[in-house]
Length: 356
Image (cartoon, rainbow, N blue to C red):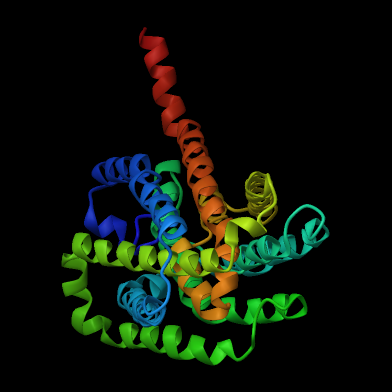
């Protein structure tokens, strides 16, 4: 899967602790760069050369196959063993799930007065859709690790969120958007066919091919990113034909970025307060903050292509793409801040100062 969302297995079993932190730090420095540029280039290509005519059904069929492949790989990579092994932290996992599937949607509904006064209805639907998505896996683990949190619990929580999101997100979308005309409930059958069945097939075949998949991480990462870029091209091609940029008022993207940033700030603050209210240890607080504040781009784009009509999808995924970049930048800075405040780091700094 793409760098911020793919399952990286049990970090403790792959790398020694010191090397693991260095690998995650390197990963965080690279997260926003290549894939973000590829996304922007794909949007530009679709804007200049959108797929038309006979190419449209070809793109539709290819996108449907890419969605099924992506969720099949989700199923293969999600470690059931890690989720079962982390059941002892059930209060923490419930808090992460509540942040992803209760707190976020409630905040999304609270933004309703913004439409249509501040945001076009489609962009508001995109914000609502964003709030229903599951957490990421790899980015949650990476940020938790660097900040000094409970990495094993992060793996369990993020994996469980991703697993449940396949079913919970379409149901939330149906409940929240029905009044706004954003979803045909007939799409839920397509969800079962294109998302749930491939995911379950991947889980069933994990004991047979999970090791083979893990050994080909780099190659399969290219497949994952290529699948997402194909979906983005198909989505924005249809949106361009429908007049995407003509539908956007001046400054709408800037307002979307501002609202997405405020949404992330609210969730970061509320998850921190919740962790302290529940009496979580510092390591578990970090896990809740980073796993509970993420939204998965790699799950969101294929879900959007299945749940919404092709002329809507381009505008609906724009807030997700904006939020994706903001969450990486903000959480990378927050992880470094947590790391600098670790007791060991403070003790080392004090010793160094005394020695000097």
